[in-house]
Amino acid sequence: GAVVSQHPSRVICKSGTSVKIECRSLDFQATTMFWYRQFPKQSLMLMATSNEGSKATYEQGVEKDKFLINHASLTLSTLTVTSAHPEDSSFYICSATSSAKNIQYFGAGTRLSVL
Amino acid sequence: AQSVTQLDSHVSVSEGTPVLLRCNYSSSYSPSLFWYVQHPNKGLQLLLKYTSAATLVKGINGFEAEFKKSETSFHLTKPSAHMSDAAEYFCVVTYNQAGTALIFGKGTTLSVSS
Image 1 (spheres, chains in turn purple, green):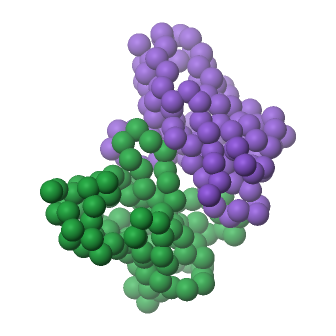
Image 2 (image 1 turned 90 degrees about the horizontal axis):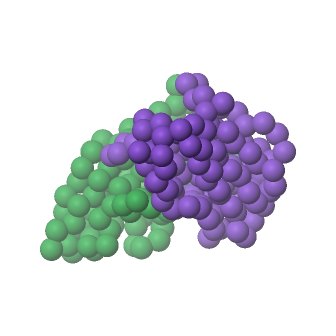
Image 3 (image 1 turned 135 degrees about the horizontal axis):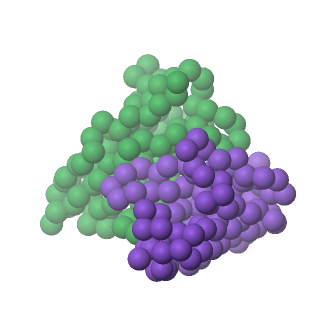
């Protein structure tokens, strides 16, 4: 199966700082990447969809200035949590797909803890 | 509106006994259906998918699921549970061919006791 790498796996930061999370498709070109947020013992909530070379599409209620998404290449998308606050603490998961694959492949997730 | 319902939030089985995780979906179009597994603090791993080919789908780790259109169900089964199967399982449906619009069930926690 396809491999999606997400880095870092865990990050702890101070309130007010910004954190960048990377999502890479290692063995295929990802035309579309997704960012999800998962609260404890809950399902995944789609935050945004990003297509390579274009602006991300954010789901209702997700602040685009708070969660900056960049998808500059076919193998890399980044999510930057700007001016993080404790309520941003969560598990963030990316996924990637291509028109050839028809399946979303998920990264291992990033546990963000904001102190 | 499209939706997917996982009927049990928590299922407990003994090692070596069968596993049944239930999933129903709403059907406006021809869906593609998936089961994903998530171990603690890990991402999601694809177990199997149905995309209008054979109705009985075999996946990894001995899991399989049967698509029943008349019942709008896609239950996940395994003949004999293993301790390593303990995890969170998500039933997922998508209604577009590109697979880009996923709708997740709320998840079922599978516990396996020795």
